Length: 182
Length: 85
Image 1 (cartoon, rainbow over the protein chains, first blue to last red):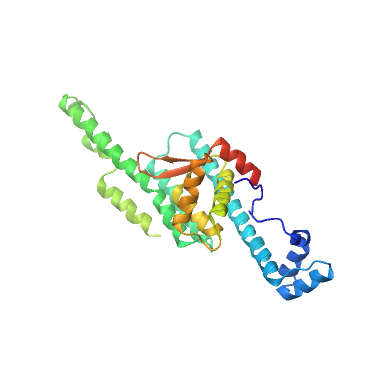
Image 2: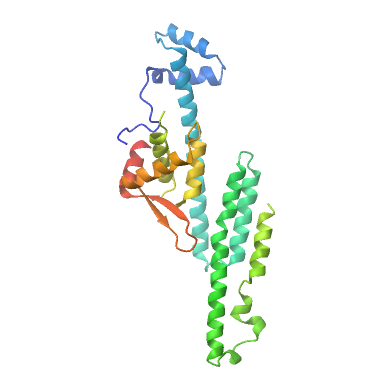
């Protein structure tokens, strides 16, 4: 990993003609053979194979740059969400589900989103649901401990206790079913 | 042609653009498959990650809760990513 080039390709004599080549290929839609002839007129002799490889490498690099831009935009959005959540108390499960739905909807609207991407977005919710399950178990243990000490009778009615308000397995299943609808 | 150097370069550039946000392993793999043509094999992607980690450019971290892996750049990785853009 000692080369400083972002594309990893060696410098080419065609790089000096990059602007013209891009204009020919993308605006004038010339063939490789025509581009080769025009280059020859400018004193640059190159084989069709070499010209084709150079063009492929340029297209590949443009695709990568586009992808990197999307990644950077995604990171900025994540930072924004985290900042917004940071100003408020810890987000409740419902807030996370709403954010998650929004993300799925946004990705669904983007024509080039691969189905695999939506799958990964759905996967993102699993740790949250796992946390909710663990939280429910912890609360149940705490409630049982309180009961054994005889303090449970003094706490609020069962319907408003922490354990009752925590997610039950059926509720988690219901949420999972809803998330899978998209 | 061996795609591993290209995969490694892309990984460093991608993690650099995330500005410190840990990136889930599966999403990193997906991005590499979209960025490198022809799409590399999973074994090649894994080897690239192993080599980057062994060289101290990236750091993988496993979440105890869900066993998921996320990746971030190390100081050395940040320096290298800055060089390659």
